[in-house]
Amino acid sequence: MRQELDHLIHFAHEHNLFDAESSVLISVSGGLDSMVLLGLMTALRNRGEVAEVRAIHFNHGTRIENSDEEKLVRDYCKALKVPFLLRKLQIESGANFEKRARDLRYEKLDEALLLGEFLLLAHHIDDSFEWSLMEQMRAGAIKASLGVPVINGKIRRPLMAFSKNQLRAIAIKQFIPYLNDPTNRENGHDRNYLRNEVIPDLAKRYPKYLRNYVFRSNQLARELKLHAGSRGPLNAHLLGNWGAVIYRRDFELDLSGAETLLTDAICSFSTSGRGVLQKQISKMIGGSLSGSKGPFTLSGGVKGYSYPGMIIICGPEGPDYLALLDKQMVKYLKKAKATQIPRVDLNQFSTSLYEAAKSKTEHLPFFAFCLDQGAKSIIKDSLKWDSRFPLLSEYCKEQGIYFRPILNFISYWKKGGAKRKGSFFFAKI
Image (cartoon, rainbow, N blue to C red; front, side):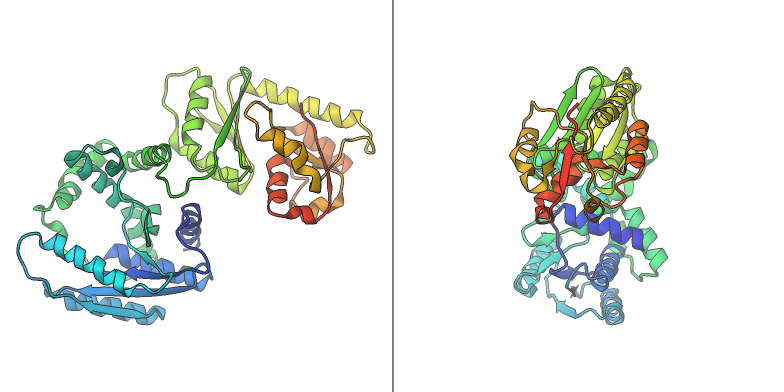
């Protein structure tokens, strides 16, 4: 389950849901979604990614299955060594029963929360899509049509990183027990009607509907400044006819939220009327955190390359430009003797390059170079081969010159790395 846990913790950090010092209370019904959430969060607790996990279960006493659900949750909590809270609710039947029950549950959940504790609910991507459809049918507000919020006050919804099918797969692989609520088959409720009648037909005709919904909703949420993971402003340098470089002006390496800029850049250089590949864009953004990746083949002869904190979009003329840049950087390094190469003490990084690069008009250099062996302690694998710049890679390897995407060094400087002295230089081609 390592891959699923890594995905969940990345999603949690991206959206500021919780951290290693957080305590969480999970509302667990005994159904698939909440039982998987309980299993995942307990695994994260065991890994030290969250401090404490508690579970709360509500027994409404309205169905014969309620006692079985209570026992299932209680036994699973005991097996996981998770504190179990039980609340028995007494609600009279009649009009608006679902709403009255929901309101009472939220009231009891708020009472059960400890100081500083977050409440985790098990809504997932499918739930959000269903809610979005309902709101589009019932109301005209754009915000409501985004779907279920990932964060709402003390409430966090970590499973918005997964689809229903993914949760089923996790439950099967990890032998997580759960019970199905028979009322989910009753189509008198709007959500059940959409879930059981409308969406299955949509899925057959449009199999990528969920992926497109997530992509579109994230873009809209960021444009409306409602996205839980919103960060500093993004920069897009259009560099002649060959391509563009996209990075964040506060020099954070995570480029989440760059979907719109990337889409615009790709479309501006594409020679085709085909649509942009959303999966590839997501991979490029992921590559901005995990390291250099690419090429990503996009529409109309456009290719993309990910570096830490930076994405390069190349149009049809891009390969020729990168080849020229490769030669120019080697020429620059050969021309200067080692003692003559301009150096920038890491402690002085902000005085020139950092301030200049924040400008929308300045061209941010691709790489920073270092002759100091201390680079090994800053950036691992500094002599790693870069297939986009083969001549530069070969020369630097021969001469023992360390090079890395410049935002690696800026990010290190921002985090206080300037306390470790080192001399760096860059070629502004």
